[in-house]
Length: 178
Image (tube, rainbow, N blue to C red; front, side):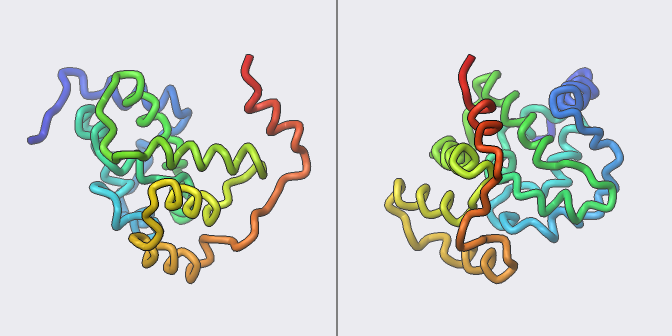
């Protein structure tokens, strides 16, 4: 069922303010969806999530699995003719969903995101192969996503070895608790 909030601009304003991204320039050309290596696991394409926000469909946007499946690889943004930082929008929606106590659409996804943060803490960047392997080992589910992993390797979206930043102190500062 489609649900429009009374003030359908409120969600768009809030996500724009929290993410710093003006997603209203989205052409809905679906280029982001064509580039996304995780599209098959999503219930809405990235541009469709933007449309949900634009229409003020807060419940649908916050409960969808897409915001949790997105790993922030920036493939969508690099393909986008308007250069919209879609992962930042997804991040804003995740934060809002957590703040509101919305039931997370993807079971065990918080463990996955923890693994993403662990690689950033360790290398200063994400190492997608390590993220996937650690997450799959924790779940004891090693083979279910083998097809996606092989596609990502083929498209050169997975590096076998992690790239590291030089300034480790900058990363430590980011992760230091106040």
